[in-house]
Amino acid sequence: MKVLVLNCGSSSIKYQLRDMEKDEVIAKGTVAKIGEPGSYIEHETGGKKTRREAVIPNHSEGLSLVMKAMLDEEHGVIKDLREIAAVGHRVVHGGAAFTEPALITPEVQEKIRECIPLAPLHNPANLAGITEAKKQLPEVPHVAVFDTAFHQTMPEKAYMYAVPREFYIQYGVRKYGFHGTSCRYVSKKAEEMLGSSSDRLKMIICHLGNGVTLNAVQGGKSVDTSMGLTPLEGLIMGTRCGDIDPGVIFYLHRRANLSVEELDKILNKKSGLLGVSGVSNDMREVIKGAEAGNSRCKLALEMYAYRVKKYIGAYAAAMGGLDVLVFTAGIGENSPLMRGMICENLEFLGVKLDGEANVKTVKAEGVISSPDSKVKVLVVPTDEEKMIALDTMEIAEKVKKI
Ligand code: AMP
Image (cartoon, rainbow, N blue to C red; front, side):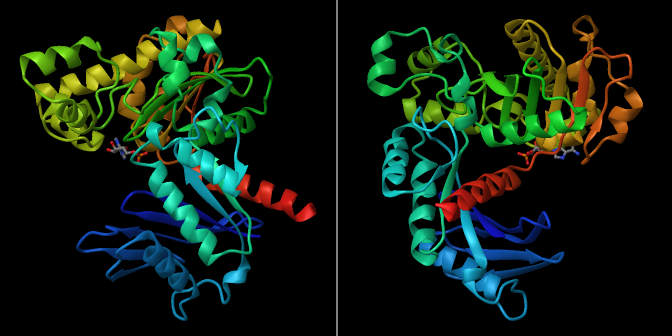
């Protein structure tokens, strides 16, 4: 079965065509700068990349180019669009309505639309992708896989904010969490690696990418997560501040005369590693800066690791213990330095790194704790597209049987 995975942003479409039996990515690519000057499509297959500039005014045109690229005589990978058996769509916000992936029906599309106020930048683009893909591939099942769904198992005490209850009832103000597809994939993979799927297994997943999520997973279920109503809450990220005293916002509004829009932009786009280091939102650049003696870069690294460490302590306390600590995403998979800084002095929790294994495990899965470590520490490369494709295949097969 060939499954097309689509991740539509406001000005981009990321796609992968996967052969499910062979567990292979047949082709992948990006349509970028949709509706902007300089738009292009980059298509990759068999290790060869091609790039074509084109006028791409909207998602409809962008998707047509994706289909053309896949059918292309020279760089294509299929002869007929009917070879695509199903389409999986990444959808950022499913609110409280979706606890698992869903076959896309008009009712499901309507519910995704109702979640737009919760993700005004993402859900409209996800919906545009769904509408267009359904037009261009009308015969096959389309499946929505939600970033928020995995976290719907959190108990009320973890997802409620201590604000007047009417804000929850009227406006859905609560913690939803994100990166759920990545966390679900990584937690399953970690269980496979350990050969253990006990319903008591206590796991903390550190998804450390441009966006950062820490996730407490007990018996395979998300019980707490660091992002909130929006992806701004929690850890220090590339450009996002993570947890701050909400009073900072009112203080800056009054004292520095900054509007809500300006503060929104500052806390989302100019803070985090970038704001602290003054150098970059890219962890590699911040590490380079610190190594060259830049004190703000050093502070950024220390703050980053300290915050992750505090969340690990908090989630271990929330679960009443810890069996497995997992690192994933760009920084988690590639930075032994950051993993080492985070795990330093966590021996009291039973975390003991194997220094050599930590340094060696880059862009690969592996165990990086020492054999006598009570907590197993793992590196698990995440693969959200694969998870979306697997979910899509499962639903497509059920639809076929009906
Ligand atoms: P992601 O969002 O998962 O693609 O992760 C992006 C982040 O991973 C960026 O901050 C990169 O700087 C970081 N990253 C990628 N490779 C490395 C590396 N070798 N060392 C440190 N950080 C890295």
